[in-house]
Image (cartoon, rainbow, N blue to C red):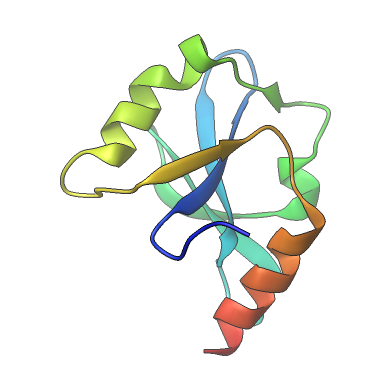
Length: 100
C-alpha cells in the first residue's frame, strides 16, 4: 500500500481527453464512486464501471504528462503514484476513507 502522502492515480483516455482517476478517494459518502479530474470538467466523480469501460484505455505517459504536471503543481500539489489499472486494495481504502 502507498505511503499516506502519496495519492494513487490512474490515467485513462478516450483518445481525445485524458482523465485522472483517484481510486482511493471517495466521491460519495459510501465510497461507491471515486474522484476524478479532467481539464474540461475539472473535479468530478465516476464509478468503477466507467473507469473500466472499454470506451477508455490506459493513457500513455506522453498523453497524461500535461495533466500530471497540472495536478502535481499549485494549487493541487498532489504527490502522485501512477497505476495502470485498479488494484483490489484500492476499493478497501476508498471505502475506509468514506467512513471517516
